[in-house]
Image 1: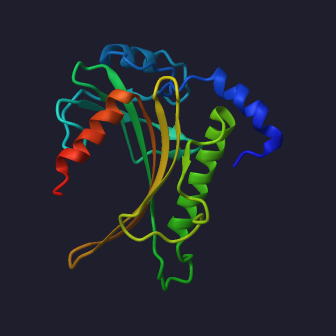
Image 2 (image 1 turned 180 degrees about the horizontal axis):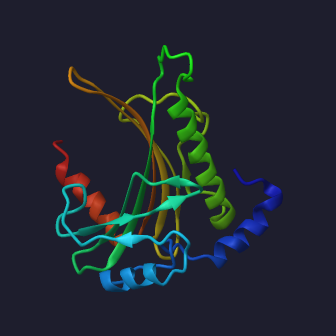
Image 3 (image 1 turned 30 degrees about the vertical axis):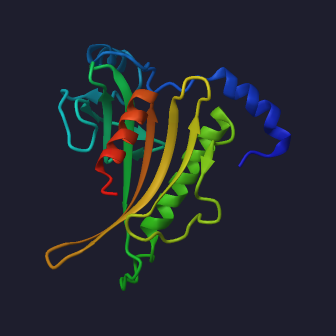
Length: 213
């Protein structure tokens, strides 16, 4: 993704930037500190934070608070959350962007796979911007797959991991299809996640505990 001619510059840039969460937030902030920082950010579009709550999609004992008004590169997030650990300290920020898709549309005014194309384009924009700031990614599963259809549930990611702190930034793309009598869903989803090792390790432990093998 980053050419050899730029490698030295990228290394210097990577060393200048810590893998902190966005919006001037810092790992380990309390809920009140997060709320205050968002209010004082001075952004034109002020992000608001909801109350803390538990959720089945995060590790047991962790809390999340929905973020409202999140917009990135002119795309509004469908869902956005700040995640707090068991001591109620900030440990992750999650953004989700969604595009409706139709691979087999018969509408002459619609393009087939338009949602897929838009999701991949946005994915590329995010990863390119992050590569400029943090250098080459630690992992990239999308090589050779750009723009291609994904089977439902397949998830590909590009991620950066700080070798010193273990903090991680990840961009993932997936497809969600539901073909039922009552409803039909075909979405492409791009997720942007900032996380520290507390959240990363908790998610790994959760996967191990859920393994039936």
